[in-house]
Length: 381
Image 1 (cartoon, rainbow, N blue to C red):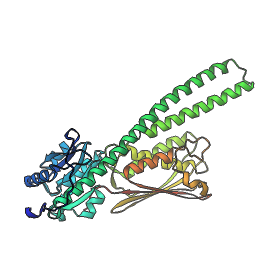
Image 2 (cartoon, helix red, strand yellow; image 1 turned 180 degrees about the vertical axis):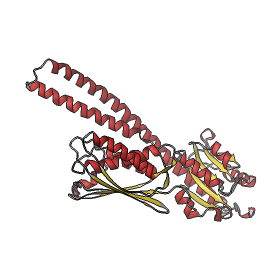
Image 3 (cartoon, helix red, strand yellow; image 1 turned 60 degrees about the vertical axis):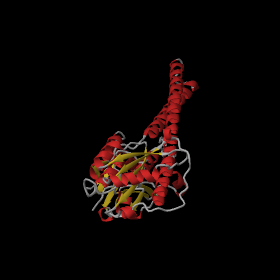
Image 4 (tube, rainbow, N blue to C red; image 1 turned 90 degrees about the vertical axis):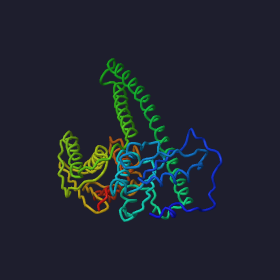
């Protein structure tokens, strides 16, 4: 490695003069070369972004990095080759599998052959990639600034999401309490009214609508609580079988039985297993609900690719009218008489959390096709 080329001097770096050290941005420097740590600290010593300086944390191996990384680390400056030839890639995988999607990861490598740029950026959710010999002081500052700005924006979005989640839970709790009160008083009045009276019929409507409202509140609460957990390497076939089993139980309550036509070569993908099953359950159940007959037919085809797994779910049901297609993923939009309209909405939220591509095609009177494209997150060699 040519140390003289590591951080060549360049003019024109605009640095703010004062920093709030109590709220410093945390930057984790992961490299087995002491010189890299020293030079990084030297370059970022008087760096300020939005009135906040930088607190550098040092890790000299992948194992040390895994112990230090946390959600409040804004940026990881990560070497690839340390105690092993792919130690840095293991750190990146560890961070993402633990559900940390906010921390920005900048890969710095002196041996690019060990980590091909296109492959690691797409498959390991790397946010930036630099060769050490090309990373001047200005370029390091630019890369860190871009990463911190991105981290800041993601934190704002995450905090807003959590605020909306708390608001939704609070509103749901209050609505549920009022609904129970309304239903309770309706039941008391119903006991004192004649079954053939108009009032009795009205009270039955009140109870029915109260029950439906309570179910909707429960659906909203469940939707708001959805959050991606730890990513694991799991079998697509096992996820699909679990989702089908749940649908079978639900459909059996209606006196129906699904005929599954499955083509699914077994393969492993990294995802949150419970959320994966939930998304597949909602998609499969939706296909069954829109299929006619006592034995609906649902076709599921899974194609294994090098960079992505593609799953297609096809039903032979009534399809969706063109005028309704723009709204199928919207909350509370349902073409079912007693549906809450949250099934596809839930599936889409899970897909977005995993960065999957979810699409739906339909022709009225001829059925629908749902396509899920799941990118591979592991290196395939």
